[in-house]
Image 1 (spheres, rainbow, N blue to C red):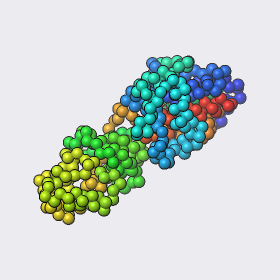
Image 2: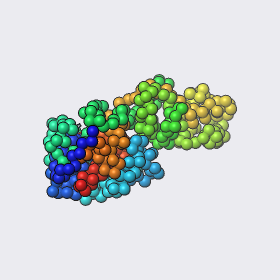
Image 3: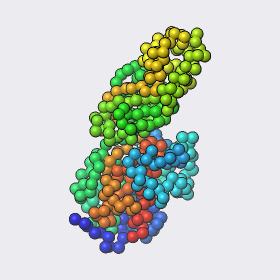
Image 4: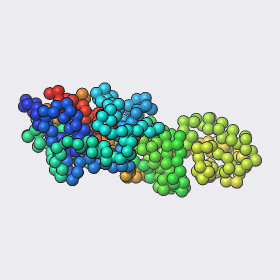
Length: 393
Ligand SMILES: Cc1cc2nc3c(=O)[nH]c(=O)nc-3n(C[C@H](O)[C@H](O)[C@H](O)COP(=O)(O)OP(=O)(O)OC[C@H]3O[C@@H](n4cnc5c(N)ncnc54)[C@H](O)[C@@H]3O)c2cc1C
């Protein structure tokens, strides 16, 4: 059944969910159409609770995108939609908007953008300024009876029944951005060690990510692992979070390149213990762990390392395998992959194809990004698209 709510004059707008996407939709709408009445309904006792804890309380509100060659690298789901909508609102628009609203920003060396104050609450107060927000109000699509347009910005959730019962297609939600719990191998005893230039992948798949890997007390985390978990979110969920993790601890070095690196170290240090001479990217403890994994004792001199041991060491360094036993809940940042199917909405306006006057924006849609400010940028970009569409009606 096609319901047509667009015949009435577009005046009263309801937004369900006063999070990042909801508040920004309202701000942009009121900037574009000050004659509109915009009300937000928030299930919790205060708006923007999640934004307040983003980026560890500092709010990584966007990214310069300088290191991004293709949006599919940072948006495992929804990159084509983001490509289209970012013509209307990109990272520079986000930065200008916040700066025009009094927030000074800094772009870190890793391209992540934060408020100079390092306080997420500064972003919260700018976003909620001047808005009419009803807190402690969990509402549903029955609001459509009383408003000219309804925007759903309810974020990632487990339960989408209240949306799907209106015939709207939902892609099964699964978690994204999580560390891995690994089978015990002794690696966990290196907890706290970082390897900055690593490449991690899931054996037997094309899922791959690079960057820093952090060794934890029960597995691995860090930007490279979170990125991998994001790209492989659905695959891992379907495999009950059991898979083989393959790590190249030397970045994208091939076996031959790694052999040459290690051979150079060996040639220059023939009379020294293997334990004492190693690539700069490792701590000595981590190096010893790799040597032990390759069957080389700590007090072996480089001159005593045979061809087979050398090959085993190269193999440990470039294609080390660990059994993933599960997903570790991540407190720092997590998002939901899945949600309202992109096929259910118009890709320019984000209006529901089957219910006129109903719009979706933010994590409630099947769009999510890797860490680095990409998820909030998605919220701002989608919110702007909806606001522009409603304002133009
Ligand atoms: C700990 C943590 C840290 C993060 N840090 C970053 C970061 O630094 N940078 C980044 O880019 N991303 C970060 N993210 C991800 C980012 O916060 C989300 O992608 C973003 O908040 C999504 O915005 P949203 O408006 O779609 O959803 P939300 O911000 O989740 O807002 C949805 C709102 O809707 C309300 N709601 C839900 N159902 C109803 C209902 N039926 N009626 C009324 N209200 C309802 C909820 O209470 C909530 O307030 C982080 C996430 C977490 C969990």
